[in-house]
Image (cartoon, rainbow, N blue to C red; front, side, top):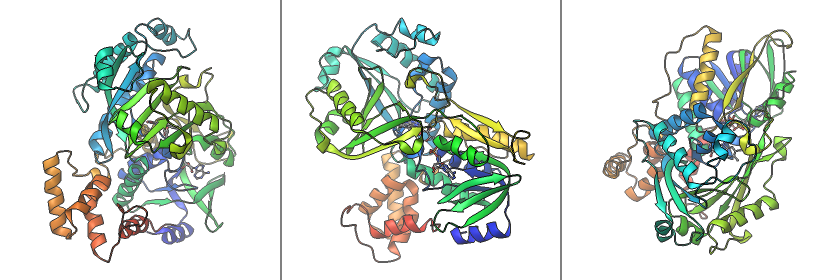
Length: 503
Ligand SMILES: Cc1cc2nc3c(=O)[nH]c(=O)nc-3n(C[C@H](O)[C@H](O)[C@H](O)COP(=O)(O)OP(=O)(O)OC[C@H]3O[C@@H](n4cnc5c(N)ncnc54)[C@H](O)[C@@H]3O)c2cc1C
């Protein structure tokens, strides 16, 4: 159904099993799992799909090695497992990313780590080689027998400086390990959403649709394009509004303080010298203040981030000039000879991490773990329960969605029929990482669609095996490259726009 058809059907029949509010990765992940298990679900977002925290991430599918020192072993193990699954299920978007840590001290952190683990030390402080080595050994162990990514390696000072010539000569070691790069998180989220819709005719999604209030058995939604309101009567509401969870609960008359969000900003730099220096590696390191920061290659640009600053209201998040100064200084700490100025910035973005409200003194210590907060029954003015999805990481979205779905299925009196553990996503279905096999697939697409192989190679790199569907569409009418981005064509953009005729 297109947008108008969904809206008419809602008017005719406002009864639905589950209403999910918020189409970030947690809402979308839960939508997929529920629809896969035959539940009728309506997913709404007040803006574009995947435009909140999920569009502001550092693009990393990672276990979060530094959470080990907070004693969050369960979280790290789960995230490493989920990182591996993302690399397997969405190989066209999530790729192993060599990650290098430049280390400036041998021993620092060795006494701090156990103190931090026991909760006796609050302040972040610099980690030395030994403690990083221990962390990486553990991290490798969590990758387990499924060696989706290679083991870590530590290089001496001399070898590090021979390999990374512009690296700050004060370095004592570098350690290289692997995580995953989510090259295009928004596309990945949309592909999950499209898969889910294709799988279940009772799965519907609406963007530009806000939840504005609720009472007894009814929730009121407002169409942000027409201002018209719609009533729905769900058996269960899943509040996946990320940093806006408390505000969304408030609109249902629920007074919660579940989120203590922190703002994180990024810069995208057009800086060929910096890109050449880092190569295909992410540099992941501590700044002077103990914050972990990163520089890494994103297509032909460099992505730099991120800050971690407490914020009262998510709508206030902006990347400030102070943050820009902080990032520019931090690059100079690692690569002193590479000059970066504001002229190199082509894009800034910022978002708020929907972290659980925490008493931690330093923002970096707030847990990245996830949980479901249930509000129902007496004390609320609602006849349905509300599950609020608190915390989490992009990386662990599937596991979080599974946890929410299990709970929802049990509430609805249903049993799980399918799971998403090994379920390929979008253009990751049938995608091969082997160069020969890729060539073979592209030859096949070219023969079947009559689009030239050079163009198909670009589409394959961008959309995985969905390239064939796209190529067939492109060939149905005259096409031309975009003036500003000749790598993209008009028919390609029309395809992307028309696939969602919902707005
Ligand atoms: C700076 C930063 C860096 C990060 N880096 C990483 C990383 O590298 N790796 C990683 O794994 N994780 C990372 N994360 C964490 C990860 O991005 C988030 O945990 C995740 O995206 C949260 O998704 P969500 O679906 O819960 O929230 P969101 O993506 O914010 O989705 C919530 C949605 O709810 C909608 N909404 C709000 N109110 C309403 C309403 N009333 N009605 C309808 N819709 C509503 C919003 O429009 C929004 O789209 C990072 C986060 C940030 C901010």
